[in-house]
Image (tube, rainbow, N blue to C red; front, side, top):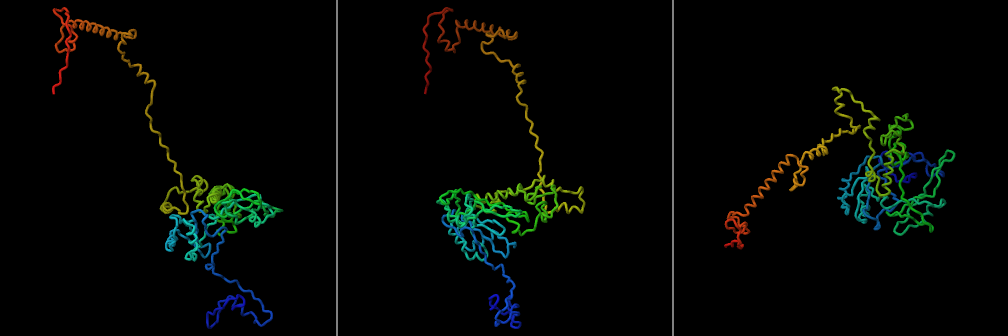
Length: 469
């Protein structure tokens, strides 16, 4: 056993008698243990293998579901890697094959989806199956399986809490209405102040409470007093090193980017002037840290959707589309220079443009001319047609309106009158003469005559011929 690291030594060779203990070199200069005051020799730090370090996940809420939770029961899976900077990717289809091989049941069809570079999400229809899935030993060796905090907790803002109360006192004296979960965490919000050029943080009367379950109460009770509860929305955090969102400068692992021109250098060393500013998030002519940036407004909308709908960042970012630039803005900021004539040496450049830069142009088509419309209603032409047309007179109209009759019409009317007189005279003469024998209806009413003089005669009855079968 080593007296310094308290580890058991193992010999690797029989000749040199080398040991694997890191304190082997220090033992050579340590005096024997028979001395009254042995010297303490510092030992070098031991190097541990990070790949073998067990993963410990400390969630704020519960680590399992219960029967009071509402479906679907979501579980997140993340692949264990040697370091956070490794390029490990977890494909949802490949992980779905692992689930089938392990015979995992009651998974909602279509719920397995990618929510990150190395993270997937799966949903179950029953809470018992979700709990059994998280206890699967075959998955714990290669994957981190846990319940997302937003699916078992809700966060609210409570104002009017005494400043001298501790977090333990607040949890002890607070109570929630019936049907709401208990308070499992309290965090007091602080305000930043400057005294003599030095920044400090002081407590405020506002606290952020984390409630168990998916129900956010409208109010809570504290020492027989009622305090309102508002929805807590996570702040929009931006890194001052890479100008991305979601982390701060102390946690950044990316290369620096300028917040003035978007170049690959620090913004403190940039000499860009006001006309040369370019945001690396949206491409606009402003600082990347400007609060009016469209990307900053998009990030705020994502945080609001996460708080209201209890969803992850990946799901909320799909609701709000990414900020894009117009072609006019691209041309005005970075004009494209093209050669006037392409030579043989330039054909490779023309045919094979750069794959790293692309420009989308808005094509404006010439509007089509409207079709020719036919001539519509012409009142003047219609009136001319009406004036030329002479309406035919009704029966008797010639006699009643003789003052309006022209000369040609008067001659025609006189001829008609003469014809009527002649026809009347003829019918009167035919009344006293014999008519043809085939005129039956005339014989019924005609009186019998003898030498042209009328005589009394009886009317013979006329019968219709009978129908013979």
